Amino acid sequence: MPKAVGIDLGTTNSVIAVMEGGKPDVIVNAEGARTTPSVVAYKGEERLVGQIAKRQAALNPKATLFEVKRFIGRRWDEIREEAGRIPFVVKEGQGGGVRIEANGQDLAPEQVSAEVLRKLVNDASAKIGETIRDVVITVPAYFDNSQREATRQAGEIAGLNVLRVINEPTAAALAYGLDKKGNETVLVFDLGGGTFDVTILELGEGVFEVKSTSGDTHLGGADFDQRIVSWLADEFKKDHNFDLRKDPQALQRLIEAAERAKIELSQASETTISLPFITFDPETRTPLHLERTLSRAKFEELIGDLLRRVREPVQRALSDAKLSPAQIDEVILVGGSTRVPAVKRIVKDIVGKEPNESVNPDEAVALGAAVQAGIISGDASLGDIVLVDVTPLTLGVEVKGGMIAPLITRNTTVPAKKTEVFTTAENNQPGVEINVLQGERPLAADNKSLGRFKLEGIPPMRAGTPQIEVTFDIDANGILHVTAKEKSSGKEASIRIENTTTLDKTEVERMVREAEQNASADKARREKIEKRNALDSLRVQALQQIDESAADQALKDRVKALADEAEEATKGDDDARVADVQKRLEDALRELMTASQAQGDAQGQPKQDDDVIDADFKPAD
Ligand code: AMP
Image (cartoon, rainbow, N blue to C red; front, side):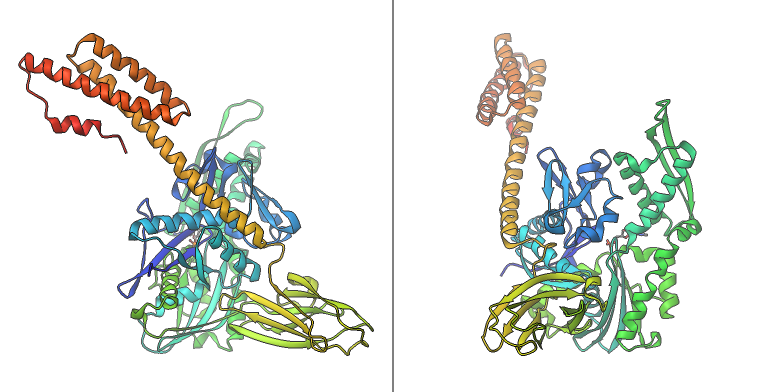
């Protein structure tokens, strides 16, 4: 059976891991790196993913997509403000969802994430020498239903079989606790690029039981970067009366420089940000440069309110788990942003304990996901590990007066199933509309609507008589299925929650097809380029041989004519012509070298080694 892998699909970076000899291990990508930037760029007909996409971001700011995880499964009105702060176009899609515009294409965030997943899996398949299809993908624990469903769909679009969607902190705890023997209560503090999660678990004898989880899906290292960007742009505006945020290229450079400065400040107490030629003075057209020194103290001041925002979710998780900080045995830090010294300080301050830094914050989540993939696919080396997770947010339906009636409260163990009976408010009401909600606020309008559906054909009855059974069923992925049934008539309606922020089935199918077509088009394009490169290097070799050869001029002229033809063919679109010229030039070149050798022999020059001739004729691959 081919291996199942675990994937940490991060806001900033992604990691893929697999069980190997009873232990989870990260699989390096094609570039030899353990993490892959979650960046996708569209350039002409090409799609670039990972480091290569990140590297060209400043030159292609409008079609280099990053931090797309912030938009996956969200409604436009939830992310409108963030959308204005990035160099590419994020806009409202049909039905209030989010779309991204790049290179003339209208893309769903799921499609962009699918490109990252595809690269991770393709590289890993090549590395381990088998085709990977089964994956476990992690999501922030605090992701709601639509965000989870959208992540699962991204996997589907990438042609993968998503065995399970699991929570990032739970995965990190799996990686941390795999070798632990005794019982421990741990708090996982996970601050990544775009999201913050805190989860409290009890570990012991192979059981990993989540007690509570909380978080903020809008808080992460990218927000720290944004604060530096705003500060730099404001200062620059003061000096030059020019807003760098209006220039996508300058903005992209600012974002990159801000992240670098932030990372440096995790080690140093001061750093210099230097961006020469950041723009031109609009009046004098002279180049303008940006140079600023940022101290760690100033940085901490810039992010002060963001840091304070982590406090409440930690306290909520503790109170939901009915634990005091003193009852936490270990605090585990996960996510790149926990390297910021001020973050470590605030964690210590809240929990009153030095954080445990034994896990690698960049890799723990993927490693844990690989363990979960191993458990699901029956990896015998793992023994009996039991994972008990919870749902992060309360689920309910809207009832009269615009209130929410909760069916499954937050921090309920999943999978879970709950049925409640509702009735009608009016006499002879023929149907009811069920609005499924997720969130903690008492008023329906303040929570996220996951979808609405109608149960129709209720026989005429007095108000309050019909018995409408509503059942909520959350699967192990934390994804909800809802059914409603009127008991006297047996009328039933159900939905798998797919609302406006997730894609419908036909859309997913279309994207799967497109992604497959894209993958084969990419392959064809690569082959086309490779063939032209091979012909071009043969042409260069031919010109060199003409110069060095002692063969007669007529033969040299013929090779030169073919080399010219090759030059033209590499510029054109005709593959048959490329192949034909390649063949004829190879033959002519072989002739030239033989003639040259014969001439050399006649003149007493040493005979060239046959092997060298053969090696020269290998098409460049
Ligand atoms: P993750 O989503 O866990 O990959 O975290 C990525 C975030 O961590 C990004 O915002 C990075 O800029 C940030 N990050 C990575 N390394 C460091 C570091 N040494 N100091 C501060 N932030 C970091």
